[in-house]
Amino acid sequence: MPKIFMASLGCAKNLVDAETMLGETLGGEFSLAVRPRDADVIVVNTCGFIEEARNEAREVIQGYLAIKKRSRGRIRVAAAGCWAEREPREILAEFPDLDAVWGLGIPSSLGEAIRRLLAGPNGVPEADGHPAGSGARPPREGTRLLSTPASYAYLRLSDGCDNRCSYCAIPLIRGGLISRDPAAILEEARTLEAGGIRELVLIGQDTTAYGRDSGSAGAGLAWLLERLLRELSVPRLRLLYAHPARLDDRVADLLLNEPRLCGYLDLPIQHISDRILALMGRGYGRERVEEILDRFAGGGPTIRTTLLLGFPGEGEGDFLEALELVKTGRFRHLGAFAYSPERGTPARDLPGRVPPEEAGRRRDAILEAQREVAFAWLDSRIGGREEILADSRLENGRWLARSVHEAPDADGNIILDGFSGRSGQFVTACIKRREGYDLLAESGGRKSGRKRNRA
Image (cartoon, rainbow, N blue to C red):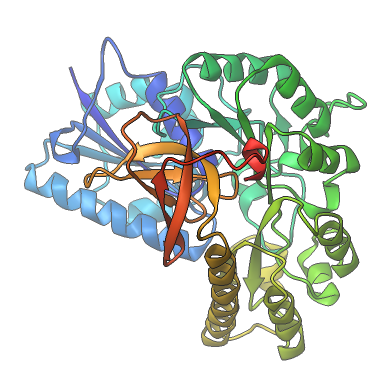
């Protein structure tokens, strides 16, 4: 029975693709390899969003090709995912020892692709008859092999994006917005809940755009959230990837008032300068960002954001405007990236290119300012009691856990001592100290009396 090893890079949407590939393939004819050297086929599910992500994919592919070489060619190595969809032939030219490059069509046909791979010639950049790079397809439905801890799982609402931000290659890779059928979403959510999942993390390229392609009046994100809350009893729902221009009042009210919807908002603003936001094609300005931040001030949800520095035309004043916003402490979590000129995007042809070294300096300055904000906030939680969700056990007997304030694979963790339960249990813990961006906590103590996901 051929064994498959999967390495998935990039975002949670890519991880769901990988889980779908494996879920539809394993069993009967193929089995899962825990270690790459034990596999017959290694699949690298790549990210191709920016150059930094492609460089990570390059390192990972090179590492697995080294394992292939040590196996004397017994192991086959294939690249799949977003980079493979975008630049299949470039990947083959760079890595001639790869055995195949598969685009985004592969999740529904990984078994057939592997059968061809094991029986036929190497280096065929296609997926189930669809040439790699031919565009996105509707989100895959079907069984997933979950790779997350038993406590949480991602629930994809849509794929693709209609925003067409001037810097972003995602629509060129995954195509326009395609919302999943609500019945399919609810069915999958019920299955995950029945399997013991305690937190559903809702994802999409832009979750706030859900339903905009269906033409059904009112059947948008708020409507879907209300159905999920009404028809499920899972303790936590968490919303990621909310576009500032489309965060409507109904969703905001749910974030403020619904105890089972995590008081947590992932709001990638990208910048705060009106001029730069216009060049980015974001569809909003500083006034809109301030409106949202003001609405959630004083006990509202924990806000995470993303900033893009060094965009073409960004002057020192634009950068300082973003820096001053970060220093106000409005964001509990923040990611910052230096601009990457992506082939086929309008921003690549804009004048006023910021030198990469300067873009990196501005990114680092933003991150340094946010570090002070984040550390002060984390320190303020020391001595308090919070209800946290146990995710996974560490080798030293401690546990990785999270409160409502931390999204998986994005923010810091709570390292839990004195817990002897299982993944998916809620624990009342006392926060003892901070280590970097992580908090250390000890199980036990009285509940704080606050709502579970407002801890």
